[in-house]
Length: 383
Ligand SMILES: [Zn+2]
Picture (tube, rainbow, N blue to C red):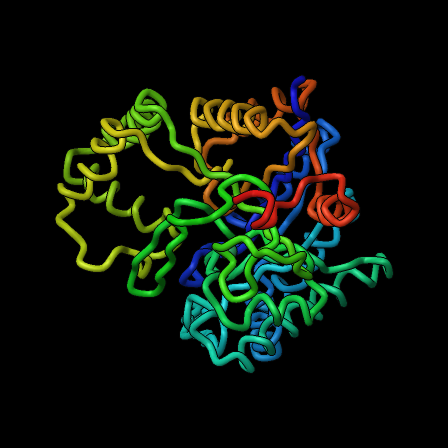
């Protein structure tokens, strides 16, 4: 029997990691375009607005009318998405803490991982962000509930306090873990190479969400889907990247590859420690993955159509292997990075027609996990 796959499409809706970017171009316009696409297929998804960003806009809006205008529009876009049936849940970037706005530019001074903050300060960020979201949405729906979370730069674990703080705030679902992801940058260290569950939702060990708990915990983690692409798919993606660059000269191509590395993670400051030469980087980014196959986070803004197709094959293969009648899968998207809408449109139209795929919001996922409709792994069962 073919398992039914419940796809939760999620979007981290935000400016770039260093606070740069035209908000109309990289947030408002892409959201409107995605809403139109999803509306055409009757698909409901989830948006994760970075609320710390919005709090910074609100905090400084009295001295800067342009910030107020954009912050009002932000609220309106969030409400529009919600009114069109999409879910809106809690996401924040702690680097907006104590942000400075000078000559029309943001200067972000906070730390990129909320895990690097004192627990009391971290809790205040989480709480004020959640309250802002609730105020914004309860004005149009008093029944709105904020119950799902995605961490600043996906930094969730290990932490002695973060999961418990989320539980204290009424959060019951986390979707921050991307199994296999490993970042070691100036701003962030993240090691999700050894995650107990790489596919199914699970009860996390409360001090380290990479581990499955023996207990039924008050919060559930659903991993963001990741997969290892074939050499063919990777080469194709890189060739199309190269094709775009090759119009310029080789110099530009290499600095372009360099820039792409930075954009991959939103900001230059994410570049790995001890960066190698542009040529070595181009080799690592463009040539090596083609030889070895490469691990991808299932980000529908970043993948070519052929990789989206491989991603779906990987989801179906693993869903079948677990022998469950139905299984939820969380995908991610960064609207600020979309440069190829046709790949997303083709993927969405095909997935919408498939008889084994349903689309689900994170609020729906939360209730189905709690009602026992979906399997949730615990150590005694799964490992
Ligand atoms: Zn984000």
